[in-house]
Image 1 (cartoon, helix red, strand yellow):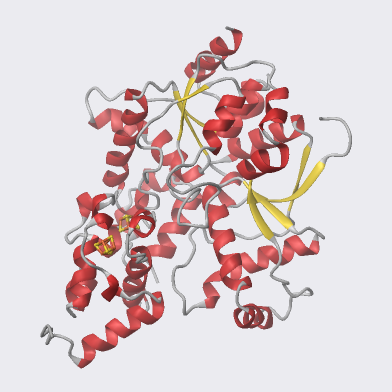
Image 2: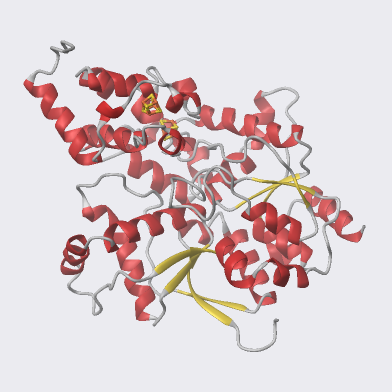
Length: 296
Length: 135
Ligand code: SF4
Ligand code: SF4
């Protein structure tokens, strides 16, 4: 139901959704409007650090997360929504690492004595995919579809941060289905493909670009060979690596054929009948591909 | 008993440190190789993840600390998720990186990144690479 009181939730954007990943945020707001979800951006949020520190002896590495949790509680909220898989993973794990140990929690609270509020340890970090599946349900998503994407074959790319390690993800770590279920709700056809859980090389894009080009070639080709028309994902770093970097792969690998890469929110927007412009999609070929499906 | 004989005091100290930082017991590993089989960075590694764990068991800490392996790892948690012995390999590699980084030895030379590349990188790439590869 889109009438009535909206479902409100505190929203943590993270740095990349304000820069190269703007289209992710823009399309998320657009579909949230259709679904009557009100995302309230946290004031004075800071970067989460993007990667969860794996050291157990250094509480300081988790301070960025705790500050953000304080901002959430200042809003009177007990949940925070993320879009970016890496923010989700970092905030969720750091939050649990700190909140599960009263000593660590009080150490950090003491350190941040200038904050007016002490963090209770009770905020829950959630990803938009969880909200769609668990709070709204696929039926409600389906009811908003005005242009079913019938015939479109979509490869859902999970990568790492959305599912690993055990307990940190939005779904089963070896056999997730949340994105495929979403694809089905939009009237499109989920592709079964072998590389959906493989890593794109992540931050090695800076230090070892060739590794990422090799990963991208492998992942995109795998989706193609499995019959996909496009790939959807949930991370602006994956988007850069397996999306933007396809141009470089094509330059060095003769015969490589790319695929459009979209955020899952952009695909939802299309099925909800929104314009490409509202979803931050500029690539003409992608727009043509999807609109032809919707019209069919 | 197997004569390891290579656990000198300084090596033992580093191993202790790795264990303290990671809270992982590397001696639980039985060398099945699963961790290396699914590693996305394997093509750039000089020693495989399971070999790194074995070398640590043998006390050969220098060989692991000076390897490329610890720096080309992408922290994807595939090894961690699939180890039948529940060993968090990604954590061990992070501890090894930290042993180096806490001595202020940076691994990321920004001068090596061409100017035109720098401008197009997403913020998330900068922050994550700097957090993993510099002190
Ligand atoms: S998967 Fe686990 S037990 Fe097997 S070699 Fe790797 S660390 Fe050892
Ligand atoms: S966490 Fe590192 S070592 Fe383990 S599979 Fe991923 S890249 Fe390889």
